[in-house]
Length: 217
Image (cartoon, rainbow, N blue to C red; front, top):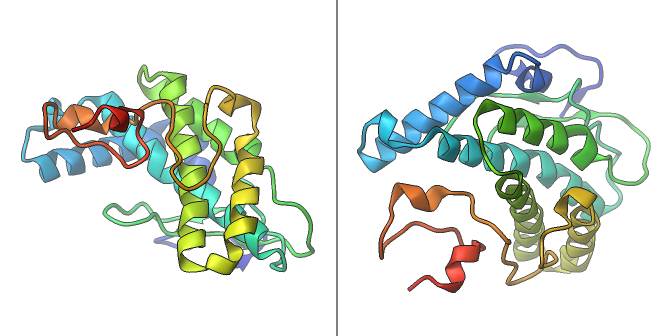
């Protein structure tokens, strides 16, 4: 956390730069993710579809935005967090959860409008980089919501009811209306993040909540 109104100091960056109209920072991030995926798979960068890299990048960033909101709502007694793009800081790192610093806004109250104020603009910006189905991107959001609550429930079982309740509230956003399942244990999204395209065939890589898991061997 950092004081509200403070300016980021390197290596911290202003999160709002990811949502800028020119898309430069987000495009660079997608390129870095693409290179990392290629390196892990031992293949040329061109062999990794850019839309796969964009989806993977989007899922990771969306998860980092959603987790603090779910955690704050589950704990209930934390100061309200300032989850607005203009105040968030982040570090452009790969290989682990993105470092995120949230300004303390003070006071208390309901969870901020993290979907409308942060996740929706991020989703629109990611979709503008390369053609990716909105259903895939919003499926990433649904996965991130349920995943955040699941992590809290696993680490703090006494907070599980509050965490799942917070997740279900976020999942009630109109943009997530095409998701068939509500957040909860055993959640399965209605789409795929596209990571399977990096390892097609019987040993394909799919996530635990992927719709393709139903038919997976």
